[in-house]
Amino acid sequence: MRDIDIAKLARQDGLDIVIDLNGYTENSRSGICAHRAAPVQISCLGYPESMGANWIDYIVADKNLIPETSQACYSEKPIYLPHHYQAQDNGLPIDATVPTRTVLGRPENGFVFCALSNSYKITPAEFDLWMRLLQAVEGSVLWLLQDNVLVLKNLMIEAAKRGVDPKQLVFAKRTDHGQYLARFQRADLYLDTFIYKRGCDRK
Image 1 (tube, rainbow, N blue to C red):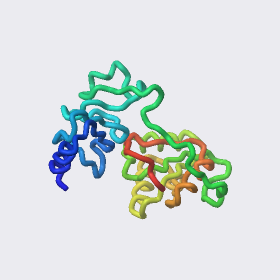
Image 2 (image 1 turned 90 degrees about the vertical axis):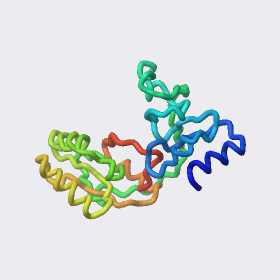
Image 3 (image 1 turned 45 degrees about the horizontal axis):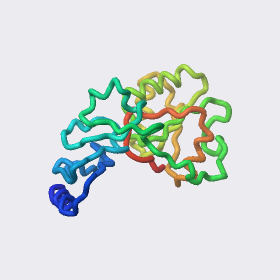
């Protein structure tokens, strides 16, 4: 259905509140809210920035995400949760069997930086920082997600341009979520990307 038709249907059904979980992210349908699907429309979770739109009335947040001094930067009014705006499930299953670093192709004794986000999130800004870390920490490696051969080759080329031995980049293939969580036990420090996207990346 078209955005406007969904909005009309929502109004016909008498919805009081619509919550947009995507904002300006991939596959979003924010146009539904742009056509005013409900009297009250709230942005929650997926896009923790201002939509800059007069058709989103509130944003679910916490005071770390939006300090009171930053409220003027948001077109939405914040609805502050007491602790953290993003609920997490700490009951997700984690595989009991964790391969050794050797099996995973990681050094047993060296420091392992880990950044298993989707590769499209990696920008030159954080990659510069990561390469400086590898140069500063002797014997360290950066553990990345192996999306495809082209990404692998390009990241290694960019590492060499920054004076880092491409062998310091090691790659993990995608696996099921239980094993994905278990593998973090073989890293020393997780490095996140600056780009945020709704939901957990399933590796």
